[in-house]
Amino acid sequence: MDGILDSSRTLTIKEIPVSEVVVSGLNVRSDMQSGTEDSSIDDLARSIRERGLLNPLTVLYQNGKYELIVGRRRFLALQSLGWKIVPAIVRTNVDDVSARILSLIENVHRADLHPLDKAKAYQQIYETFGTYSKVSEETGVSIPTVKRYLSLLQLAPSIQATLTTSNGPIGISALSKLAEWFPNFEEQEHVLEKIEGFTQQVQIEILDRSQGDINKIAELCEQAFGGCFSIFICKGIDRCPHIPKGCVEDIRRVIAASKVALPIKVRNQKEKAQYA
Image (tube, rainbow, N blue to C red; front, top):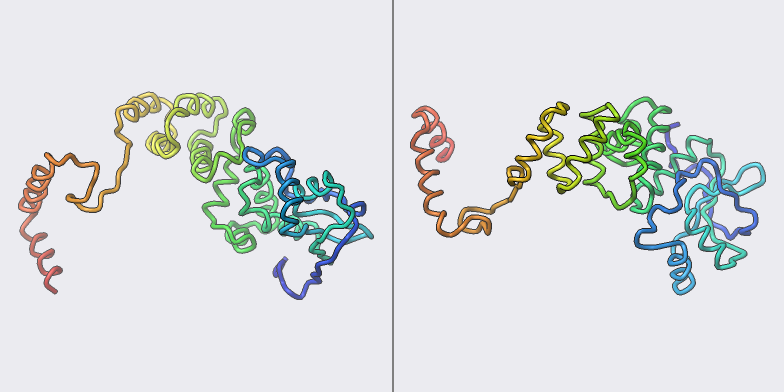
């Protein structure tokens, strides 16, 4: 399985008849509505009509037919426009798993691929190679990102049904945390109902602080309502827009007092380091 993108593999770009293209069962994309929150197939067709096809399809040629592995939305748009011939990257001598990996690699950075499609593709690649590091190597995606997407497969079906491309990386991280800390489906649904009104960063904070204890969720939500988990980054006391001007001198005095209160040994170590 090494060298899936090896340049020694046969790779050509040619124009092929639309009628000879079939959608491969190896195509990563299964949810054709994903990515249409901002742009539909009709919108894509209109763009292609006005500007042309910017990226060719990717097909696998085997057994006398062209199997589409990347570019399904583009293919549907081209069909709606009545194109008879389309440009395509044609790959040969690629096995099924390699074809799926190719489909994932070319799609994984696209915002319009459904999160579950990504997760299922990562799962198959992981089952093939057996290590997260190999999945990361083949796809160019970090190990933590791979694990986050795989966690989505551990969510309750009712939660999976709500996933869309609009969740974004932070949303995926929050749902991944939910699956990590609460493997029970009923608890997942209960916790999500409690935290869904918060920003996704706060949701992550609540989930991490709960450590998987559902009894802590209500109290943590109360703390979040009080602004306990709001985090601001200040670039120095004088330049921080979140510190009231009247509090600056008080904060200076607190900082100065904390320095005085340091043990003599620690202070001397800091002074030595400062003037070393």
